[in-house]
Amino acid sequence: MSISQATDRTSTVIDSARWPRVARVPQYPVRAAVARQIFNQATRQLPVAVQLPGRARTGTGPVFEVVSDRFFDRLGKDLKVGFGESYMAGEWRAGDGTDLADLLTVFARQLAELVPGGLQRLRRLVDQPIARLNDRVGARSNISHHYDLSNELFATFLDPTMSYSSALFDSSDEEPLAVAQRRKIDNILDLAGVTAGARVLEIGTGWGQLAIQAAQRGAEVHSITLSAEQRDLARKRISEAGVHAEVELCDYRDVQGRYDAIVSVEMIEAVGEQYWPEYFATVADRLEPGGRFGLQSITMAHDRLLTTRNSQSWIHEYIFPGGLIPSVEVIRTMGAAAGLDVAAQQDFGADYARTLRLWRERFTASSERVDGLGFDEVFRRMWEFYLAYSEAGFRSGYLNVAQFALTRSS
Image (cartoon, rainbow, N blue to C red; front, side):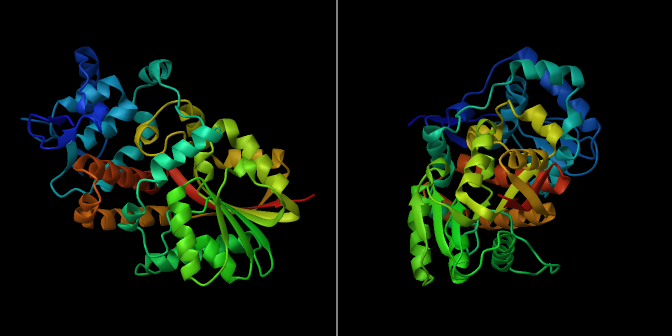
């Protein structure tokens, strides 16, 4: 194992064997100088205070503290990936009691305008395409990369339902997360028309909570996942709940039979643009005539999807390889092409921001448990950034989440 210790004012210890990109600081002086200029120009437009090494603080608002000038080296090499990698390396932080999501929300609200138009066009010429396509082999690898990290890791920040998707809260500020998660599941089961005796296919098991609640309604549940860790724990939780549901490792493209209802909660984001038509066609083929498809999906504006769909981001590199968030237009258009019409849509993006905030609070309070599971400081910083980055996306309106009811008419 090789260890790299950052200099300047950083203190993050980086295992270069585990985190080769984070340990290796790029050296492109001209590009770093351009990145510094863009950063300075962008932050002057924002309600944010900037603290650079050895300089007086400028601006007012949430504090962006640059701990090391290596931050600009990473931005200069690859803006989309370098910003997050620099946080992982401890080269910048939210300073003076500023909450990380508060700081990132300031940037997210004007994300499309921060980089000058000319440089955006130039950047598209050098953007790296999204790696790891979601064919059958790639999809299993991509899912394993994230969901097979450790069931115990996810338990450090999820509620007792082990639901890893947006909750649906009532108007109370004090409602427990687990209650809101169960409501979210009941809501999508209602949209899919799941009642006693219904044959139900769940695409993307998670850790079994939806299968449990569907089985408690008296439905016959067949749930599929590509994560062995999730399958094993879901089976255990279903058994402990005293209900029956079948859970198996299976690609959605390989499912056989017909179902009265199909449900899928935040799995479509892992399908990939190339496979969206096949995904909706498969759902339509597996539904009985008159059947209903309950879909929960993160969404983004269609113009932003078109702008970003072909470039590798920090999220792709470290969190969800091969993933792509669809737009509402994609869901409606692809669904219609497969014979599935959207009968209902319920948006609740603010609830996802609240869910993510609660997850991040639990995760940061569990740092000793996370360390005990074998995850190092770079991983903890990566996960904190991921949760705060995502929360900022929903708080700013850059991202949304919705539940859809799609019907097959014939």
